Image 1 (tube, one colour):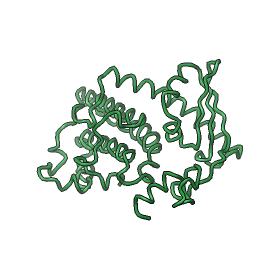
Image 2 (cartoon, one colour):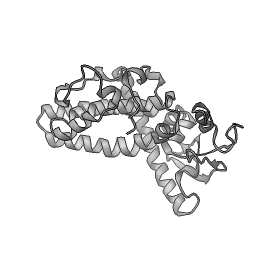
Image 3 (cartoon, one colour):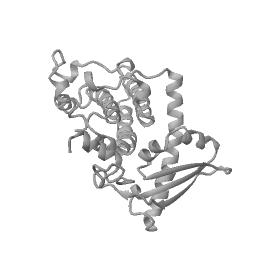
Image 4 (cartoon, helix red, strand yellow):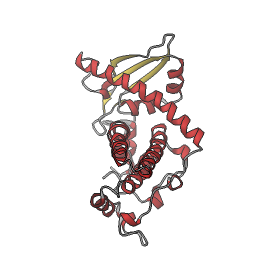
Length: 271
């Protein structure tokens, strides 16, 4: 559904550096999944194929990537570079999953193959069945992945951020129970982190962290202790009625009722 208007020949983001940090991590994580699944097939450990794919879909894809990028996919302008970046990653994910699962979910993956985006499904020369599509390779990823050392660094750095995300999630749950906020989008976070975690967090822009944590504001401070401390307060920003994020409203006089991002989108759509 998130790819219904996607044409890989027109819309694929080909510049690796045009992807946002969470996009880059998702691409590297997908490659690691492909390596794990291919090894499991080669060793006839089919239960490991299932386990690797299941853990990936539930943990990395659903709980992290799609949760963090749903605002981009649904609220950005259709041709927004940020939206196309997320769609590019999702297209890579579909291309890998549909092929690696074809040996064990033959009919289901063929149904997926038949329901690809129209621009891709109707393309001349496309295999009529997923079983004829071939096995995915690292070289098929678009944009091309960086070298192994850079890819591993991305995975390690983002692993630190995901560790912080778990702490943030717990702090947000406590804040909801205490009635400080009703939902995460209302939260303004202050994260005090030791040096190693601080460097990973500080390397990401505040709006990248806001997207990943699904909150209104994030402030990162260097701490002297070894523990990560998260303080949750309620943002003073107002709820945008279009995207439901808490941001400054009225920055654009043409659409004073929504945030600046949504105002630009509405203008672009002629509304």
